[in-house]
Image 1 (spheres, rainbow, N blue to C red):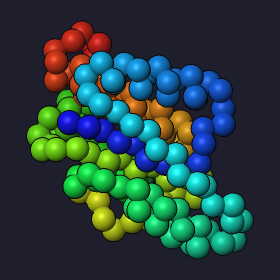
Image 2 (image 1 turned 180 degrees about the vertical axis):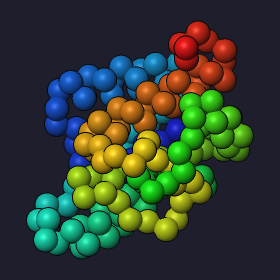
Image 3 (image 1 turned 90 degrees about the horizontal axis):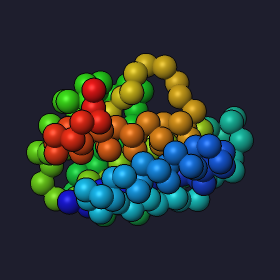
Length: 147
């Protein structure tokens, strides 16, 4: 299995970058991981719809896996154990899509995943996603990180 995480824009905050690097290294002990940073649109907030479409197209063009997970506050909420089981049942590679500050619009997702109804900074959502992927892998391999 190869996991690819695609997001719009670079991670600017050093503490988020440090956490991303840490979890990426941990994940790579289990599976192949690639992080793809697509260009972030510089359109203003009043052009939000255009920005969502543009970033969605950029990320969609870079997808490779048949299974796609979109982070979406209106998506399905799973426990860590449920997410681990879901990931274990995926056949082949999986691409995770994380939107930028304005979010992300795409209709082409195998799973829309939510970390809750609260809005999170997009850079923090990246860290949370990687932590949950790592947690899922430790659950699958029965490594005592989860509890």
